[in-house]
Length: 460
Ligand SMILES: Cc1cc2nc3c(=O)[nH]c(=O)nc-3n(C[C@H](O)[C@H](O)[C@H](O)COP(=O)(O)OP(=O)(O)OC[C@H]3O[C@@H](n4cnc5c(N)ncnc54)[C@H](O)[C@@H]3O)c2cc1C
Image (cartoon, rainbow, N blue to C red; front, side, top):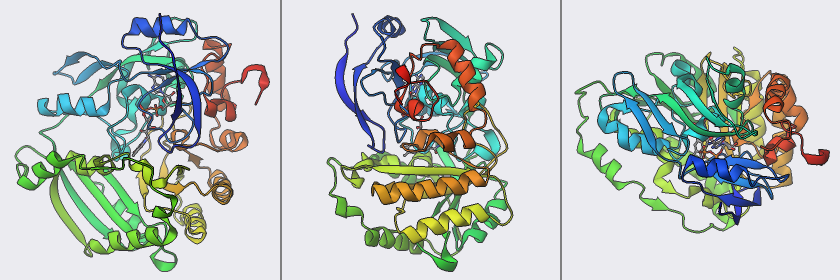
């Protein structure tokens, strides 16, 4: 018999929060059995809860936390293909496979995500311009569908179901396992350079000069106005070659051994992050980097996952939580929309220090996958309530008019009209989804808000 526990759950932004019946199956047979308990309240998979808003939430519903489905099932060292259960995390893969000379092909800015969650959001990383998104490296997805059947899908088998599951935010069923092709590497080291960029135009110059690097991203100051708007620190790197100088360096080893060194054990009071402290942080962070560029060999942890060093860092935003706004707008030599967005953010004074900018590559995948060619901007906002929501509505209009989109896995508040304008394939996606789940057994708060699934009785 399945054990269900009533629990309050939230995404990484801790806004909103809902109460659901939660189960934590350890075996696939337990997942199949638990699906039998699902009635009109609906069901949804939940990985490690690193989506920010309400993608992984279902108020009053049955939530399947997949983390204990963490078996590695098969690995072929000749090709790098790993078959594993959906609750295996990127961190698990790193721990087992970096010593064997393999690395995840794509990784988001935290290693605390499950491979199932990575596919449901079709995550991208610093190498998107070279290697595309997570789904570019995945095949043989085992999906538990609403009818109780386990269906294998990928580009060759049930390709439509695969295209709807990739970036489909858990609404086509529960991913039980998948195969991912790991990348061969010579060790844990990254050859990296950081370059201080003085403005938005300078960012694009440095980005264009960085074609030799497989991984690029830039921290960007979204607080300072005027000519220095868009200043930041551009980071670029690649997996270090065998025997690269410094790869045995003591500094890198110490950095790795020390993590995670910090914890935020309780909610910090709301005043911790006020506008003055955020401005000061940006100033210090920018100034501490000398003009020009610095090269070094670093462990993958500080390069890919600097935020994972502070456990529970989301608590610095206090009890009201925070929202992330992540957008991509198509290439435009004048960067008009991007400038308009940044001007609106800097003059609102509501942005925080956690902001990144990156040029994405040409690859596009699932019908609802976020990555499209252009420039991406992601920024955290303390939850200021109504004024913040008004600002984000305004940004939505700029992004939509420019032909861009915002990322569902970071969203907690977008309107249905905005979503439909930004994701023109939504109807095709919904037709595929509805065919596999006509009674909308799989649902989420976000899915109902955006009209991805029909709420029971048309309640929303
Ligand atoms: C610090 C930080 C940095 C990040 N950086 C990036 C980045 O660089 N690039 C990027 O793309 N994303 C990034 N993210 C977002 C994160 O990668 C995604 O939200 C990812 O989906 C989270 O995985 P999860 O296992 O925590 O899934 P959850 O957050 O638990 O769930 C996310 C979605 O996946 C669905 N889901 C989860 N497991 C399954 C399953 N087994 N079957 C079906 N559906 C499932 C859920 O229903 C939900 O819709 C970042 C997040 C954080 C906190």
